[in-house]
Length: 251
Length: 218
Image (cartoon, rainbow over all chains, first blue to last red; front, side, top):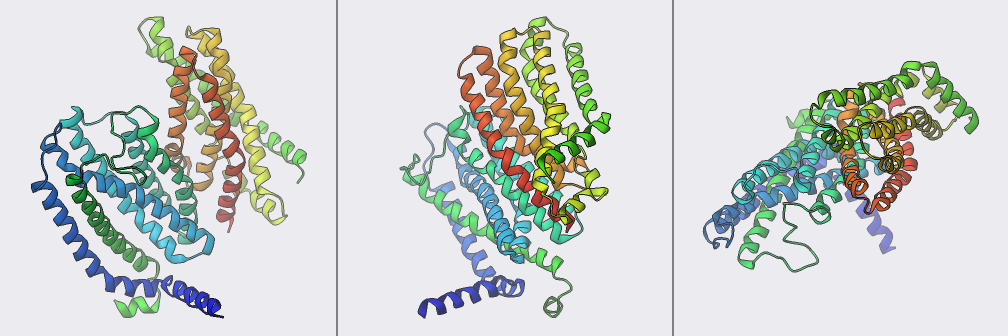
């Protein structure tokens, strides 16, 4: 009995949250909180990382771009995973909101991947002495960037939104094979890029003094990107649901 | 439709258009002929840079071969007819890719192995090269078919744009295979890896392509 009630409540909650209208209002409520808290965390991490951590033994001061580069490249891959998962949700359960979300993640993901590439090449000049190398990690991140652009251009070339959403979902799920390749590229191929310093299973290879601000930077940066995704998804909802009554009332 | 009937159907459709199957092969031969003209140095440098050129031109030729591969069927309504009469689009797509590979992929691979002797590599390396070329042309064909089915009515430029990123890991493996052939180490490992990739995508991708085509027909 209790179980059935619970299932009904959960189903109702999911269905309610999956309607663009509820999503819109709920998101509006949490947006300022998310923005200010994550901005505060990120700024703290940046100040801590830039002014209160010691110099690196080998790289000197130039390693401090880690507080920007690592969150960006981490999120560039995570956003793709998020996009693929929401595409899967769209294809399996036909939740429209998931399609809006996956479409709205694509431009944000492309921007972040570009930022990761640029910050990486800026870091490469003092450390490796070159700003670009045809190396496994760098090339596969460039491929990820092109993948994002391809997805966006595929979606834009169809006027019929339903069809475009479905094709987008198929391509983003197939393109997910790239993510493990990017993730593992530094381990599988001999590469100039160092292997990951922080992994779930092992002790981090980076000193605790630098690690804590890095964690904070990753959390804060993720919050900021979540804000961007929310804004982008609101644009998508405006675009798709412009004929609905509630949007007219809201505007 | 039965498999035999479907096979006959696709064969007739491909052979009727000489341009569709002979064109890519001729383009491949033209690229291979053009390559020595661009190298003015010794014969040795011709042989050294041959493998990358070969793989890239295979890729491009497969792109040409799949250009508008589903477009004609889509426009004359035979795909829709197949769907309405309860025929299997999966089977049709699988056989279409197989037929295209037999008439374009196999000759291109054989010519590639022959040109490899032509630029001064050993016969032994050609023998090692041939099976890997056969497998990789099939993989290229399948993936370009996937891209072309996504951009069915929007031209093959979009299809290529969205397929190329998926193909680049394949090119990395082929690059590794080149070193394996040259120094004759660990060659069979890479060949088995290619076979593994082929055996997975050979059966999964026609299913995805048929789903995508059904989306287009809605």
